[in-house]
Length: 191
Image (tube, rainbow, N blue to C red):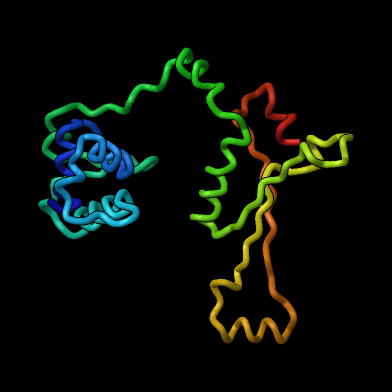
């Protein structure tokens, strides 16, 4: 079985639109992975890429792209038979029960992953608890600082000229991470 057949099998079994990552996770849980010939280090990326190529190159593909944020895929013949609606939003009760699952510091790794993967920004968490400056310490330190080195993408000749001129440019970033923003804490968090 290849990744396209794997994705089709999972989507037909689930009978709902799924992201590439969800396709992989569900197929993995159901044991379909044992039937795959190979899948690499990031199979969910490979699944998404293969489905995109199918959609681009083949008119008779079995897949259809359903939504864009996040991108979900579905099987064409099932999408015509069933009335697909977007999943209902979680009820307020469930949100309140899950609200205390994550602390702000637990979310740092997700932001770090995102900014490194999509923007090549190297980040470091600032532990303001260990600061010797106690007055106004909540505003003194950001949660995460980051640096972007554009010269990593430069050609060797451009780096050489930049070194001769003495101008290696870098970009510094400061991130303040909040678990939740609403009207009651928006002003305080922004300023």
